[in-house]
Image (cartoon, rainbow, N blue to C red; front, top):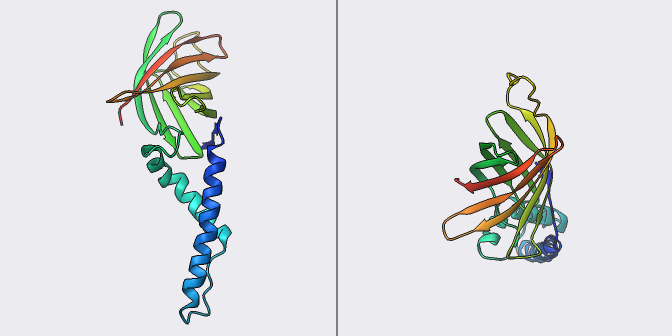
Length: 191
């Protein structure tokens, strides 16, 4: 998993809220423990509480925050299926699996002959009506029994508009590779 960037200050605001919650929680725990005869126990430090809350928000609470509209970072976790259309007119089925938390992401994209893995990622959310995922990936053969003259080893760039309708989530975008290939990719979330 790699850390991905966003183009707003949403994370800074969440860090401030989590820091304030940490200080408040430590103060509450200190007062609560002082009413008991647990002199050998002390409230945890604010830093320990902050790190715990940050991890909890990153892995679990963020997904809820997206659902209620508190977070603008789209949750694109899951399995995706679709089609890759090369500029030459060739079409291939493509599958993608995205594992995402509030701060990190891993993406693998597979065709019949190739597999791609994420190297750098960002999500543009400054335009709330048009979130865009961008990433740089490495492309490698799925197996080495390839047609003569076919070398899929490359680096590439994907840019997807993240589209929501009443029933599904879609990724619609383009790709460009270091082998001067390009085209369009359309994916629909299936899980």
